[in-house]
Every structure is written in C-alpha cells, then in structure tokens.
Image (tube, rainbow, N blue to C red; front, side):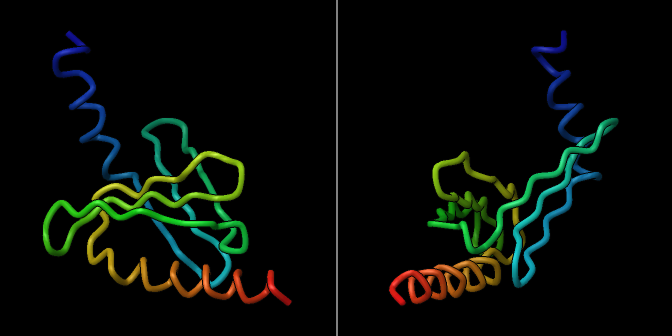
Length: 99
C-alpha cells in the first residue's frame, strides 16, 4: 500500500516542514517530518546550477558544488530571484579564483 499512495501522503505531510534559504554565504534546505535534515552549500563552493521550470513562476533548482552531490530546491516560487543570487555568486567566485 505504501508504494501506491504512502509516499504521496508522506511527501504532502512533509511539505509543511520544507524550508529553503539563500543568504550572502549559504544555500540551505531543511526538511523532515520526524527527524529534521539540513543541507548546506557555501556559495564559495557553488560551481553551477540548473533550473527546470514547472510554470512561469515555479521551478525546481538544482545547485551543484565542487566534487560533491547537488542540492535540490523543489517547487521554488519565483525562481528567478534565486538564480540571480546564484549567478552573482558564481561570477564572484570566478573573479576571486583568477586573482
């Protein structure tokens, strides 16, 4: 039964406990129903990102960092705000690495 509808119920219940944050230094996700899981990427370690749009104002953003797994921000509202911040961080990283 879990394989048919259980994972959908779990995802819906968990959605109320999903948080994303982008600061001047970090990208952070927090999720979990019972046990909270946090994931961080320092913007100085970010190498690239990909945006998959679901509609005009909602998209899923995958942020990649050097030699490690990516972080996924699902169903992000107004994803262009986030991509603007990430593009700025990548440009800053490229400038710092060439100095």
